[in-house]
Structure formats: C-alpha cells, structure tokens
Amino acid sequence: MTTLPSDVLLDRMMTLHPKVIDLTLDRVHRLLGLLGNPERAIPPAIHIAGTNGKGSTQAMIRAGLEQAGKKVHAYTSPHLARFHERIRLAGALIEEPALAALLDECVAKNGPDEITFFEITTCAAFLAFARTPADWTLLEVGLGGRLDATNVITPCLSIITPVSMDHESFLGDTLAKIASEKAGIIKRGIPVILGPQTDEGLQVMEATAARLGAPILAHGQHWQAWEERGRLIYQDENGLLDLPLPNLPGPHQIQNAGAAITALRILGHDEAACEAAVTRAEWPARMQRLRRGPLIDLAPKAELWLDGGHNPAGGEAVAATLSRMPARETHLVCGMLNTKDVTGYMRPLAPHVTRLHAVSIPGEKNTLPAEATRDAARSAGIDATAAPSVAEAVAAIAATNPEARILICGSLYLAGAILRENG
Image (cartoon, rainbow, N blue to C red; front, side):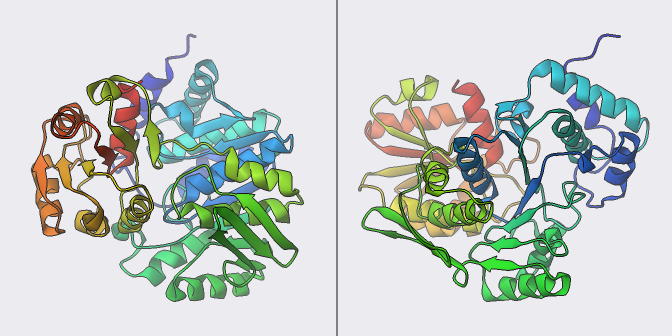
C-alpha cells in the first residue's frame, strides 16, 4: 500500500478530535501502548517547560551537545514553515518518507478513537526517537507541563524556563496555578534547573520539588549568568566561565544561555561545549535578521527583523532588545491571534517604536483582524494603522523611510507565514 504524503495525513489528524487542545494523558498512554511504548526506549531525555525561552534553551543545549560529538534528537512545537521542523533525528530534520510512514502507522494504530493533533504527532515523534540511535533526546513541552503529551517520560534532567501569564484558559488565571502546571514535569529524584522566576512561581516549584525529592538548581541561588563588558559571565559552585555573548540576540538570551550551560555542566561537558551553546545555536523567528527574499527586495535599504514572541513577557523581551540596538526609526508590522493579551504584549514596545502597521495573519482562522490589532496598539500608546498585508506594510514603510528598522512580530504563525513566503 502506498503511504500518503505527510501533509495529507496531518490534515486527516486534525479531524480526530473535536477540540484542538484537550489536556489529558489518557489518550497518549493508550496510543503509546498500542505502539509498544516507544517512549520507554528513547535515548536519555532532557524535558523543558516554561512560558518563554524553551526553544532557545533547547537550541543552545543541542549546539553544546553536538559540539561534544553527541547525536541529539529534538522535539519542538509549533513549527514555522513546515511540520518536519518539529522532529529532529540525530541532528537532522526528519525526512518526508520517514515522517509519512510514522504518521500512517500512528493513524492505523489509533483507529477511530479520539486523539488530538498534538497528541498523535507526539506519539509519532517518540516512535521516531526510539527507532533512531542517538545519545540524547531534547523534549520541549507543547502547553503547560503536567498534562502535556510529552509528560509521559522520566527524563534524566528537567528544565523550567521563566514562567509568566499565558494560556490562562487552559493553565489557570494566576501565576501560582500556571507555575503548578509547569512544575508538573518535575519527577521524583530527577534534578530540575529553574530559570529566573517570580517569587510566587518559585515558591510553587520549590514545594513541588521538595515533595518529590528532586534536587533544584535555581537561578540566583545555584547559578548566575550576566553580561559584563560585552561578555557572558556564568558562575556556579564549580567556578566561573567567561564566554562570548549569545549569538541569539536580546538580553533575555543571557538567562536562557545560563540554563543551557547549567544543563551542560551537570552532564559533565567542558567549556568548549558551553561556548558552542552560546555561539552556534540557531533558532528562527527569535529576533531573526532577514537578509534575502521578496520582502528585502521591497525595502533593500531597511533593517528587517522577525520575531514570534506573542505574550506580555515576549513583548518585554523584544522591547529590551530594541532598547539596546543603535538608534533608528523603528516600525512594527504586527499580526496576533485572538487568544492573546494583545495590549499586554504591545505596552512595553510603545516607547521604542514610531508606528505599528497591523495585519491579519494569512491563512489563520484565529487571527485577530488587522483593525482590532490596530485599535489595541492605539490603546497601548502606539500610533497605528491597518495594512492589507505584510508586503504592503513593508513597502509603505520603505516609501516613507527607506532606511527604517522594520520588525515583523506578534505571532509564531505570522513568523511561519513570513519564512515560507520569503524563502
């Protein structure tokens, strides 16, 4: 029988459950059991949860491990340009024939039973990881932690990056409730690295770790990372490292790098691996500079950037990055989902931008209409207008100021559309 292409199978998977998000582990355990429990046969795992910084931290750990000669599986979500980005096998993105065969196998085993898209594709990832030799598996939580589909494994190390308000309708309406969901990845006796946390969030995580006898390595207590004279300085009980600044731009990447370095040092890796973590990591749509493609052709003298941050903490991170860049007239081209705190995202950006050009996210049913995004920007104190498309917004900005800084932002879904369209 000929296996269908992965995009056809992925579309079919979207119909297997009436809800896009329905947090429980029952369906995942059922399908994994039918598949022979591949999650028990994957290489040693590092499990990463948090509100912001999960992907960047994972990318840095992978860069460090690969510098040390290790083969690394990695699982992340959502994808930007194509689904294959979610599953990296021993260093390379999964290829189409392998992905299509895995998805077909999972659909056949699942049969007519309900299962969400994320759940069944996570099972496919576990199947791929179990069948491909590697030294490590890096697993990024999709949403929350406690009931996330990835939380069926016992890792050798857990990491919780900074936690803030996001996805309140699924995780809870207070920081303590959200922190409790994230802390659900902490396992009995397994060390957990904590990035910078609020006092409220830290209290919840420490209580969970204490109950489970999980050793904590917390930012500010057991490790620190800071910038000094254009270098990244890292310190823990084993000593001090003087490293280059992260190649991923933004001051928030200092702490992401700190968590990654802590992980590498726990695993016994040397300074060379730690330096590779901060200098070789690649993670698209996190203050990514665009240098070629149709959008560049529309504004050849402009400075064009892309970022997928979409919650208030993401807005603060982008604002901090802009504040450190050379002075330049800055315009935002922004599209957001209707499930996000749009004004909360925009408020920190207000002092750093000249104007916001609001767009609807192409092909996304949950996009906030451009006019609503424009109105939210105005309520956050930003001069704003609506534009028919990103391309038309970029062209309009370039016509007024050819050398402007243009940041396309507000959603990973918008970032994915830009990466696809811009080649």
